[in-house]
Image 1 (cartoon, one colour):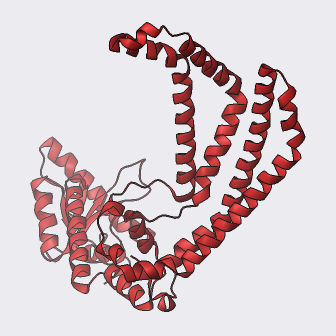
Image 2: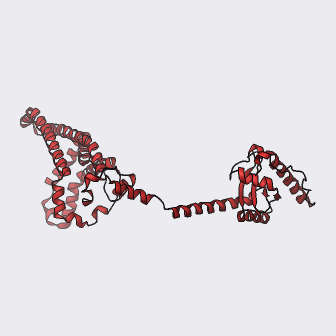
Length: 379
């Protein structure tokens, strides 16, 4: 990764989403180094302010139980474990809860900045990291200089704030020497908690100021050359052969779905063998008949075969079949100009079904041109 970043002068293109996703998979995410520490300190200060008295009482009880322990218990290993559990028991639960709260605060701060990531890639041995020359370049690189400068700024700012707070509260600290033991303990705790909280807020402010730089540096780290950008676009661009295969697969799936609709159709209008159009109409659910299947050649023959297998009426009306296949898209309702001939076809199909149900011969097909489409729909 370090060797990959050496030619920074030629990396002028912003990283693509795919490049950033690969970086996340490798375990590289933007992090603000002081954010977790600031969150832990602020959480600790808040927890101590809210439950510090209870925590101190638990610790005092542990100390008192330890001083009152029976010396004989120290000589027997079995009795020693029981005595130790009795001594540390009062404060163990509070201590575990406190540490768990701090761990959760640190994890939440890291996730808030860079998001959740789980990767073993950073643990994979990388021989490039053992290169002494590369290590020296990283040691004296611009990034190392900036990180050192930031560390000194944090040290000076936090140190100056701490020195000011200690100097400002020097009188209060000196008064602790003449106070009685319980009052001195509580006063010292309040003073140190005040100092602790202010330093935590200051560290959080520094981390918040550092966050924009870290995000900018993260994207700058993964900038790409023009050649890398072209290579990635070439990888994403599907070859013409693959496009043809995808298009053929989509057409095949569309035909399969279309053929599944033929048995549900009300009528199939044919040419008789070159064109076939299957229409479906549900009164009250559709405004007009809808084209559920169409095709030419072998597809038309397959539609007619399925219609015969499922006893769907087939009407030979070559001009109407050609017009429907030409002007109506699959799944669309027929246009207004074709309402009249299609209505005549459906009316004839209705009479045909009534005759079949009654066991009578099929009605005579109209001899006029009522099934023909208007002139503007002629093909």
